[in-house]
Amino acid sequence: MANPNEHAEGMMGEHAEKEYADFEARVKRTIYIDHLSPVVTRQVIRAALSQCAHVVSVEFVENYTIPYDIPAAALVELDDESQARSAVDLMRDFPFIIGGMPRPVRASLARPEMFPDRPSPPGSKMEFLWLKQGDPEYDGMSKLKSLAKRQEAENMA
Image (cartoon, rainbow, N blue to C red; front, side, top):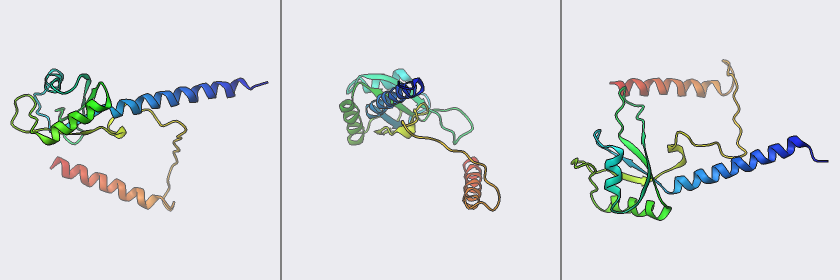
């Protein structure tokens, strides 16, 4: 007889694979727009892109390098991958000014790392461990910690 736990794990694995496949499809039809004016809204982006694509959703990307909340980039999901490629090509070939602002925006195809709600790839596991002075990885982590502090100080300057 089959073990009920194995069956449940198999169903969860299939669900995780489907969820990640749906996420990958969403990434392929999403573009990343950078250098946005602070006054640009979702409606402005929808109107600007309506000439070349149908916008499904607009999600502003939070900028963690500054102490105040001014969106400077957005992830824009379109109907399909071909519309995403066409929109990126259009913005690369011609100055594409959104909201009447005199600075052109940049566009690229989105990557999975850009999504704050991305699911974990199926089959991946995270391991956490405490490092103590003297562990082989301790020196590397100390260097990364001091580098992060230095970059934070430079950003605030």
